[in-house]
Image 1 (tube, rainbow, N blue to C red):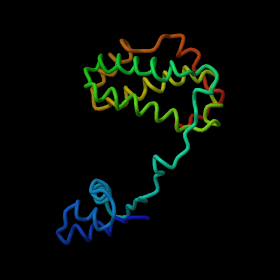
Image 2: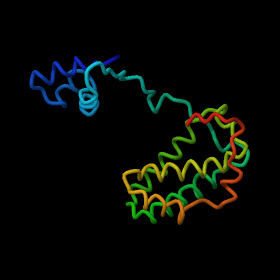
Image 3: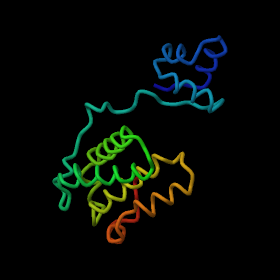
Image 4: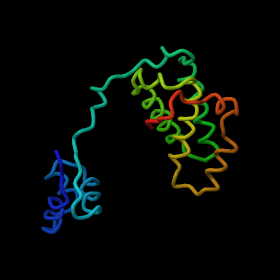
Amino acid sequence: MEIKYNDVKKLRDAGLTFAQIGKILGIHKGVAYRILKKGAGYSEKVGNKKSMRKREVFPIWEIKGIDTKLLYQEIPSLVARWCAILNLPYLAQLELTDYILDFLYSRSPEYWKQFRNPRGFIFARARKTVVNWASHLNLETKRTIEEKAGLPRWIGAENRLKSTANPN
């Protein structure tokens, strides 16, 4: 379903709140606000995300070099270290770990074939996720993360793509 700017604008001009507009159109109030904020001519497709329960999950631990120790000990430990440097709350650490694991499990087997060193990619992706999650922080804080919580040099050196295309 596609929601157009004019649909939201008419309802907003009628004096409705974004929550009321959302209920009428079957969208979240934040989506209604975003559509109105983008301006005339903007439209947004809604209801096209896959349900978390309906999507396929790939058993990533079947890939050579990736094991459960990496997924459930090493990645959470690294995220905890980076979060400690950033003074992020424990809840942020849990959210980030969950997000990273969800990302890894939702990639297809074809996705993993492009990497010579999937383990190195996983570490780099985890680090990038934590740094970008804290994107509201200033540049100096980001440099601190990269310097103090950076990955060992050998991981970065081996993390080369087989192809130059990087889908994410």
